Every structure is written in structure tokens, then in C-alpha cells.
Image 1 (cartoon, helix red, strand yellow):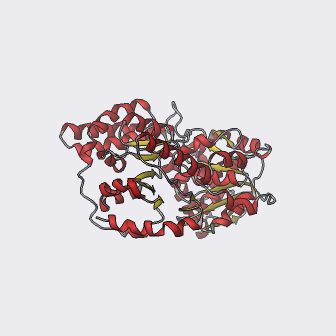
Image 2 (image 1 turned 135 degrees about the horizontal axis):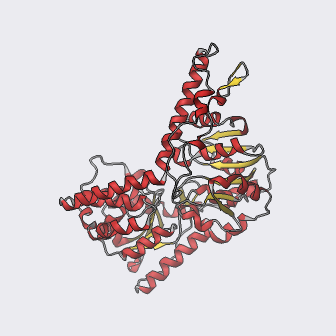
Image 3 (image 1 turned 90 degrees about the vertical axis):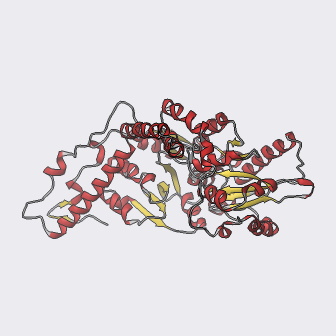
Length: 474
């Protein structure tokens, strides 16, 4: 949506950016200021003779955008979140005192995985851990899903069971699969034949669907790139064994190779779905207040892109932005290679794959300094930097003029080949310590973009084992 000029005034000038509404999210000591900017009222043309029907529609659209931003900033504000979590914690302990242990565990585990306060985590963790057994006998969902469509994808055999009792390895990706696997497959039988490797899709591992698996003694390896989640599983001291890997550590670097060396067409690329949690408004706000214009590329999917276009128009930066949507993965890599800097602006994510994709395209990445997520371990001087929201433009300028080689670092640390090798070493050493046989290594898997085999020959060889998972359906 573009701006409409009426007598020299476009509707962008009726509002000012949302800076006046809030302090920056998750900053201690500054609560939310929910008062709209006075210019909102003084600069609008409501009531004037020039206020036509077209203006009225634009005014309503801008007002809806303003309200949506206000709601989002409220949800992100640390004081609002912490106050709500205190009430949640009180409600959880009230449930506990009333003997409703199942409800208490679910409520308090929500507090644990949402709060940024260590003291609040410690407050609720003991009860959740001590009473997690109440989760084991929960009834399954009423609707039975078609799990077979996930065989060879989100349920991926990396090693088949072998003669002599040598267990196979089953890689389970996406957190939703943990619930489906638990409810609709014979987990005990699977654990007899396979070692599980779990790849949760979001941080916060004090979760009922993960804690249910502590009912068994067989080790389950959980990718835990985020430091807090790794430490929680270590404290849990159960069969859930943390592994310092995450979803962003499995990209296939070969896909970017044909496009390396492309001429730079964009200053900034942001590869993220259109969901509010990706926080595109942070980028738009920076563009609106920047000292110079930045050619910006948005690669996205999901919710209607019109919301993003309206948001960009609200900040008056639509002309700086190119938007592409639902393009093939190879096109994503080609376009990323044409950018100078990549940005990730979410506050909490397990490991957005876009960071690794950018690195393999030779593009350094900026991540917010208050992000919670497994990608923090991948942001090093060779690959990018952390920045506060207020310093986003300065960080972009720093990387635009830096001569970093993020692809070299990524090849050595987080390619699908390196991560498969690291996981194989961990599982092999564990099996040998337990006195179990290990005569065949894992095949290589990747997230490029979905969970799959890095080599077509492995898929052909292991297809029958993926199909054979049907025998474990309950």
C-alpha cells in the first residue's frame, strides 16, 4: 500500500512512530507508557474540510496498525510479562494446594519457560520436577492424526536397528511431534529398537510434552543449543540428555554455492515469516529514523503479507523494501547472497535457520542482544554481532563495512555434515560406555529447508525403515 497525497499531507504524517508509547522491551527499570503521541491528534485532519472518505479509510487503517503495535509492545514489555507471570505462579500454587497437581504442573511449567528471571524459574522448578509423574497418564488427544505422512521427514531414521541388538537412531524434529509420538505410537517398543534424538522447535524445555518422556529409563538425546535449556536438562538429571546443537546447525552449505559472489543488490535481508513474533516493526522503525536509506529485502511466508506492507507504510518506509514470498529454497539462498547484512529481530527462538543460511551465503548476521535462543552460540566475531534495538543502525553500518567471512566459520562448525559428525560421536561414545555395540555410523541429515537426508542414496536405502515405523503405531 502506498501513501496517498491530499493537499501535500500524506497519512503517514498523521501518526508518529511508536517510540513514544513504550520503553524498549525487556529493559529493567522502565515500565510501559501507554499514552499516544499528542501529534496523533494534532496532526490528523479529522473534522477538517479536507477529510474525505479516502482519508477516513487511511486513517482507520493507520489507527488499526497503531493499535496492533501498542498491543504487541505491551506483550513484550518486561514489567507486563513479569507481573502476569507472578499471577500465573500464584494460580499454579493455588492449584497445587487444592490437589490439582496436573493443572499446577502445566501452569508452573508455563511460568518456567516464559520468565527471564532466574529466581522465578527456581521458585517453580522444584514443584514441576517433583510432580512430573502426573503427566505420564494423561489421555491422548481425541483425534487420531495421520502419522505416516511424517515418516521419513519429521520422524527420520538415521540408522536402522542391526543384528546383535545394535539399536537404530530415530531423529524426531518439531516439538508438536513429541506429543503425537507419545500418544499414538508404542514408545516403549520404539525405545527398545531405536535411540531417540529430539530437536525441539522452540526454547523452554520445562514443557509437559517433553517431561512425559522421563517416565522411561532409556536415554533420549535432546538438542539444546540454548544455554538455559541445556542447564535445565542437566539439573533434571533424568534420561533426557542435553546435546549442544540446535535447529540452525543443520543447513546444507552446498545449496548456496552456485550463488556465491553475486553482486550485492540489498543492504539488509530479513528472512522471517510474517508472524508478529518476528518483530518486523523494529526494522521498519530503524529505517524510518536512519541517517540514510537502506535497500531492504524481506523474505517471508505465512500470514497475509498485507499486514507487513501496511506496517511498512505506517512507518513510511515501503519504498525502501522489496518483498518476496513463498519462493523455492534455492531462490531464498540466491537472494540472500545478494545482501550485505542479515538481521534477526525476534526475542525468543530455538534457532532460526535463516542465521545459518546467511552465514553459508557469506552474509554476516545481527541478532538482538536480549534474544533467548540456541543461535547465540553461533554469533561470534567471524559471523556477526549482537546489538540492542537502539543500536541497530550502527550495527548494520559496522557489518556493511566489515570484511567478515562467516561461511568459513560456518563450514567448520555448523554445517549439516559437521553436526551429523558431532552427533554421531556423542551417540557412539555413549553406546560404547554402556557396553552396547556400535558398528555403523549415522547418515547425514539436514534442515534445508525441511528435515531430510543430505544424500539421495541414504533415502533410498533407509526408506523401508521409515515405512517400517508403521509397525510401532498404537
